[in-house]
Length: 316
Image (tube, rainbow, N blue to C red):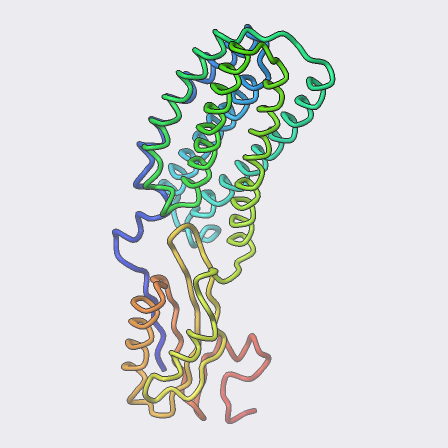
């Protein structure tokens, strides 16, 4: 009988965004400082587009803060009887919270824009333009800081998407300010407020859906369970593959458990090693628990108990 775990390398343990914590902290400091500037500017100029951008900037501040805090907590967490996998899921929860928060802000901006379209208000376009240009530069800088990490961590991706949305929002505010300065057409301000809200909603939906998929322990979209089962079945000596489960623990960390039945006891160590290597190199599953059982003989005790069978098949 064989039973083993594959946990991946130390470098792989750094996945889930921890490598980008310093960049998140720098981004948090930059965005937090500018949020105050943009909020004051929006109130002074009476610009909904600028206030909507400030609202998105506020969610950036919260999102970046939660993302950095989640990574810090995951790094410091200790494996114990209650947290056997540590606290990596905090990253996913932070991403989901970001999505919900941003969704709410976007809906509020849409509501406020509709009110202003029906009752146009005067806007100070020139100061609005100055604040928006500064905001664009800030967003570009933070965007470059987080772009690489967004490819590896759903947590960093959540903060990155918020900054990206804010970047486009700053462009919209600049365009609106220029139009109002040249034409005095003040309705362009709430119109761009609506455009910014509509731009954010689809990205927010995709992020929330991705986070929920991980929390529901669904198999990663890039992994086909049928392909894994078929591949494991080709290992010499393996008669049956069952109890296969694959899910995502956190960004870049796929987890699997599987039972293999082997006819020849002498083939059990080789089958175990080949299965581990196949899961890691072919399917990018670096944390795998593989249980090898002897066909027609003693099987895994925990599996038998779970299925309601005696652990000794001679008593079945």
